[in-house]
Amino acid sequence: MPDFKRILRFLVFILVPISLAGCLTCERKEYTFQLTGENSGKLTIKYVNIFSSLIDSTGELSADYDEMVNLWLKGEKLEKDFPQATNFKKRLFAEDGVLCGEVVMEFDDLSKVNLYRFQNKGPFMFSLSGVNDDGETFSQTNGEFGGEKMPVVFWNEDARQLSFGTKIATPDSSCVSMLQQWETKQQAYQLRDLKQLLTFPNWQQMKGTIQNKIKLF
Image 1 (cartoon, rainbow, N blue to C red):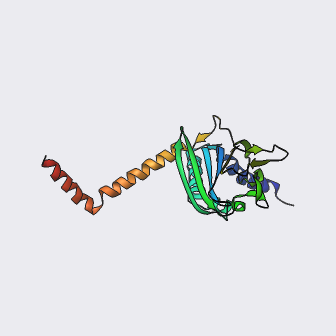
Image 2 (cartoon, rainbow, N blue to C red):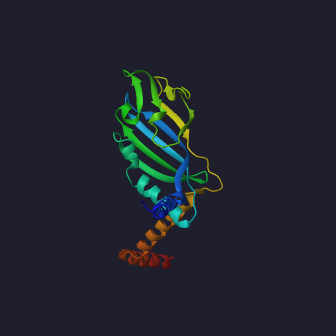
Image 3 (cartoon, rainbow, N blue to C red):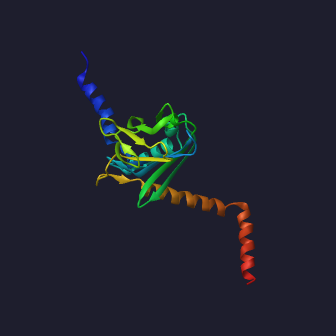
C-alpha cells in the first residue's frame, strides 16, 4: 500500500513553491508590420507595461526580472517564436511611467511572420492563432477584424503598414511594475561603468591634464 501521507507531503512540497511564484506578463502588445517589398519587411512587437503578479517577496520580484532579461532580452525565446525571421533587435525602455519592451525582426517572406495572402493576391491576412503568448485577445487594428468566429485581421492589398493590438492582463493592486527593478539595474550599471572609468590607468593621467589646464585659466 502506498504511504499517502508521504505522497501528500511530497505534492505540497512541489505545489507550494509554484503557487507562490511570481507571474511575469504585460498589459498589452502592439504588432506592426512595415512592408518594404512585395513580400518582405520588418515586424515590430511592443510589450506595454511589463509587470509581475502574485509577488510575495523581493526575491520573487528579482527572479521575475532575471527571467525577463535572461529569457526575453538576452535569450532566444523570441527567435524560437519566429524561427525564420532574421536580424532581431531587442530593447527595454521606460514610457509613460511603465516598463516596455520592443523586438524588431526582418522577414523576406510573409509566411515567416505568420502573414498570409491567397496565391499572393488580394488582402493581407493574419490569424490570431499566430500570436505566441497565452491569453492574448484582440483589441484594435488599422485593418478589419473578422470577429470571434473568424479571428482573422484583414488589410487592403495596397496597405504598407499593417498593425493590430492585443490585450493580455490588467494589473491590479497586487501587481508590481518591472519599471523600478529595471531603473535600479540601470543605475547600478552606470555606477559600475563610472567606477571602471575612474580606475582605468589612463584616466588618472587624463584627470591630471584636465586639472592642469583648468589652473591656467
